[in-house]
Each structure stands twice: as C-alpha cells, then as structure tokens.
Amino acid sequence: MTQVNQERLVNHFLDIIQIDSESKNEKAIAEALAEQLGELGFTVSKLSVPEHVSNGFNIYARLDGSLEGSIVFSSHMDTVTPGNGIEPIIEDGVIRSKGNTILGGDDKSGIAAVMEAVRVIKENNQEHKTLELAFTVYEEGGLHGSKNFDMSYIQSNYAIVLDSGGPIGTIITSAPGQQNLKVTITGRPAHAGLAPEEGINALTVAADAITNMTLSRIDEETTANIGVVRGGQATNIVMPELYIEGEARSLDDEKLAKQVEHMESTFKAAADKHGAEIEIISTRAYNAYKIADENPHVVSIKEAFESINIDPFTKPTGGGSDANVFNEKGLTTVNLSTGMSKVHTTEEFIKVSDMVDITRFVAAYLTR
Image (cartoon, rainbow, N blue to C red; front, top):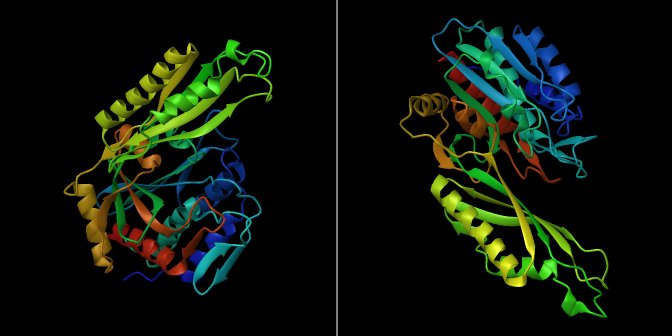
C-alpha cells in the first residue's frame, strides 16, 4: 500500500493556505501552483477568465499515464473571507487557524492531497491512469471559475471534485439546483408625521409577502431563504423602496420551479394588495445533479476506497459546488470529502489523519 509522506503533505498544505487568495484574487496561488505542477512533470495550461471573475486564471494540467483510463481531479483555489494573513496552528493532529481567519482547507486540502498523491506515485515508479487537473478560481459565491472553464481541454469522461466535509469515504452523488431572486418593491414616500396615509410603505408590503411565504426547510429536498434586505432613509419618511435578495434550492427541478413560483406570486400579491410596484429578477445559479449508485464512476470510486480499508457511502448535499457545473457541461462528476470541518468560519479545522487518508485514496484510485 502506498505510503504518504505526511510531513511533506502537511508542509505543502501550510504553504499554500498562507498564500492569500480570497475570491477574485487568485493570481498568486494560481502562479505558484502552475509552477509546482510543471516541476512535478505536468503539462500546464493557464486558462484565462474574464477580468471581473478573477485577476488570476483557471489551471488545466495533464500527466499522461500508462494504465487504462483517465480522470479529472478538481479543486478550487479561492477562499471565502476573512482569508488573508492566515496563521495556521497544529495541535494534537488538528490544523486550524489562529482564530481571526478561516483556515483555507476549503479547498486547498483537495489541492494538497492530489499533489502529494502524485509525488508518492512518482517516487515509487508506479504506473497510473492519465490524470487531468482542473483548478478553478472564484468558486465561492457563484461557481464562476468552473462556469468559465474551457472544457475543450478536458478529455476524460469522469471527474472527482475534492470539496466537501464529513468522514473520508463520503461521496456526494446528488446536489441541488439553486435559483436566486432579486426583488425591488417601490411604494410611495410621504411624511411619516404629517401625512403617513398618503404613502405606501415598501416594508409593509415586504412583511406582508414574507409572512405569507413558505420558507426555510420546505421538505427533505427543498429549502428557501430571504437573506438580504436593504431600504429606508429616515424615520420620518414612509419607506418608498426596499430591495430583497432570496434563494430557493432543491434536488428536484420541479419542486424548485414550484417554490420559486410560490415566492414570486406571493411577492406580487402583496404588492397588488398595497398598490405598490414590484420588480423581480429571477436567475438560475446552477442546476441539480443526481448520479446513481450503480454508475460505473461511483462503483470505481467505492472500490478504490475499499482497497485502502475505508468504508465509502453515497449521500446528497444541500450545497452547490463545481461538480454541479461540470455535470451540467456533460462531465460525470462527484464530490468527495477531504475531512474539512466548520468551513466558512474562523473555527475551520482539518485533521491531519483525514488529509492523509484522502491522499491515500487519490493514489489508490490513480494506480488501480
């Protein structure tokens, strides 16, 4: 069984999480990784993205193998905020930040695992499948890197995204689609003390709508949320305008469409009732995907986990990832856990043993 160099794996992880790379600012990490991958023997392509997406670039890298088959491994290079000036601490086999930033295991743990697996395979002169890498920018908050990824480079039929939490062996085979709503309610201003009855309060309209709206957990496959509210200028003015952002998600496209229609019609009914105007901009963030347990891609991943004595299991998630976009583009993709925990918080951590185990999986998968 392939022996992972734990110290080298951890040191590389610590190096790359200390390169600042909050979303849209991935140039430094992309340049560093492109150089490191070249040194590892990959053919590296820097794939440009629109300027509003990132100051960096997506990375496509290829390492030809002698075993039959090929696979894409993908991770994103960006982090959420606060992700600058990360100071990692290792205690009792756990890596965390000092507490004033995130750690960046989301998703640099995936990058570190793949690169260490390749180092180990090369050291042991092992035969391996052809490996393609897709490292993306600006995944957090919109999956923009994968949406702008030049798929003409990809030759494999299957991909593995390393960007989830939970026990090692977790295989995310279904994830929801998401629809975003941007709502502007326009009422009528009036002096709140002299003639309030002449006004139409946009907040009253919004409150009426949201009171009558089914939100939060709709069923086991569907959720909805109002997350942003902005409006108002002064207490002595009947609020003339209010801006709201919300979302709905579901593993089932029909349920998603039904929930979105419910939210839109409830907003419109409240506006009509109070005589306000309303504008709703509804956009699809990404589509759902669902891959069967008996799919050959899932079966081969399970076999690789079992070969290193880790029990694999499939499950759905409530979050989106680059896997949603790659599936939509025709590349059969699952998302695996790297053991990252409490992501998007300053309490984020990852166990060294989990990083070693996901690296062992990558090496086992590539050399089977």
